[in-house]
Length: 232
Image (cartoon, rainbow, N blue to C red; front, top):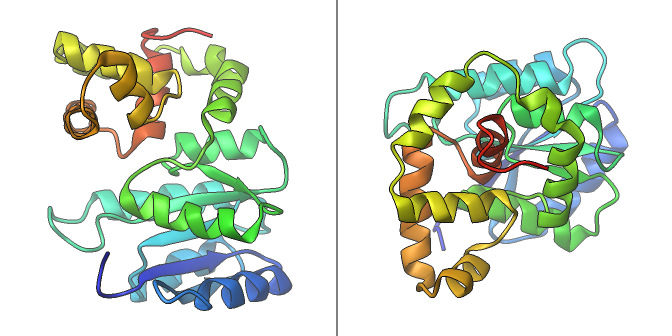
């Protein structure tokens, strides 16, 4: 448990939506809203001045939408020096439709998952904490449906060759764990299947993400589909 609260930024063009989320988030002792924005441009500007840990990002907004804003914010975070507290920014996309193509585009832009706007309050709060820990916030069943829906788009020529080379550096055990991550299994499920301790699985996951240069499990799953490690 950290001493300081998780710093949350809210980006949505509807003020009432932001107001509701803000009240909910600020009611928690371990969470704090530090910035609000009504569109992507405002978000990029606000987060240039204020440090946040997790951004709740609406995707459909006038002007700069959530996908472009996610790309810019995470590009800035990636350019920070190692160890910078601004390098670990995470984005959770808010959408009104399960399997929204905007949600997929945002994940490809680097978001750590997506959440339906009408999700129960405890799910929203849990998602913020989960993403801050470095895990993804798409339920395994949704991950599978999402990726099956777009797998043909993912396997396109391009940077995948770099991903192929990275996948080749995985050890046999890491490759096993990687395949199970891509199938949507959680760490406890992987541990049970491979007869390993959860701590060992967590270590393997860390090594896999580092070797693949993946921000989180969602990015690792995308790489698995891009490189054909798993197929729909």
